[in-house]
Image (cartoon, rainbow, N blue to C red; front, side, top):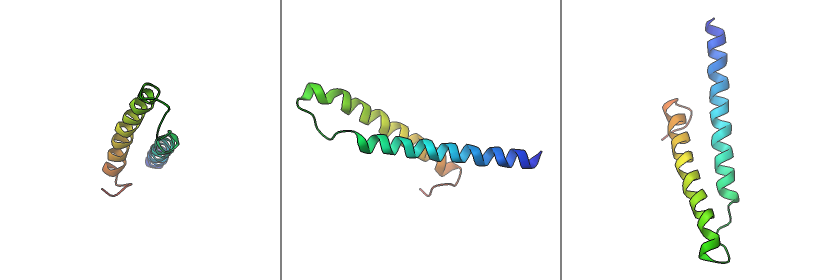
Length: 69
């Protein structure tokens, strides 16, 4: 049973790393500017959402000792 738990923990860490990577990639692919402030507003909103999600994901990985602070 211990082995199954250990395997599940590894899968969980792998999934967390994959999600962290996906969030970082999405952030890097967002445009840096737009034709107007109105056009940039949804981009800026998404950028803030991603930064919050990345921070939470990073904290979770740091707590599991996968990433260094």
